[in-house]
Length: 336
Image (tube, rainbow, N blue to C red; front, side, top):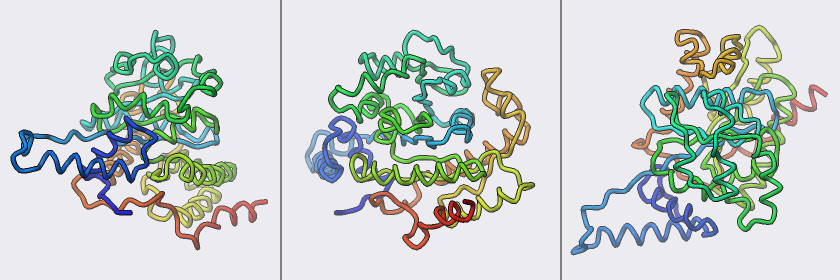
């Protein structure tokens, strides 16, 4: 096994092979990438020195098996703030509730969306809706039955990855808003992404959902996506007035270490109001605390994903040290 820098051109070429031939092991994809790169640079080659490597978008699934933790809110606002900062961003709404779709100002009754791409083979480029907040691959209530419809389809867990492959080169980041459950839709989201961003509400039940999610990730890494990484953990609905908030933060930091974002998202009425107007918080209240918090989160997110900085060696699922893995269980036992 060898390692390639996370943002190296070789890895991006390998991702192209993997997107097109999903069942290829990643190791084979990397070998193909090296051979492909060598041919392009071979002396006397007509393409030598003339080929530009097109970088693919990093795909991040925003996921938590517990609902009401600010998953959709984070997906919408982070997309909009990154777009405002000049990044090419796509929001793929993979939740049948379609709240991300309406939160980006898109009508839930659009003629085409992610369901049509996933089930009916519709062209993904024509299904994408451009908004001033960022591009959206919209959802609809029809997606609720997609899990059942995909049961007998070949490569059912990889259909979203294949659907996004044709447009991956058009963006810097693609965010997937996964449903708050563990079903075939969520499995598709986890198989399609490079990493996951986990919003955590600072309460006991959120910790229970987090521990279940970690168990799920281990299964996904083992069976479907061995390079699935944790992008980070962000605290939402944060308030220092509650002792439980500080206890939850302490325990999560023990488990995830430097994966926890320094930026926290505060409780804010304005953040809750913004979706009813079909606007992200940076448009609804540009100078409010909520907007500033998501701006800080976007800055921290971009800093962690700078393509020209030396990256960590990519290993099979960066996770917390073994001696720290009991932290969440200790919280559960202590609160019981």
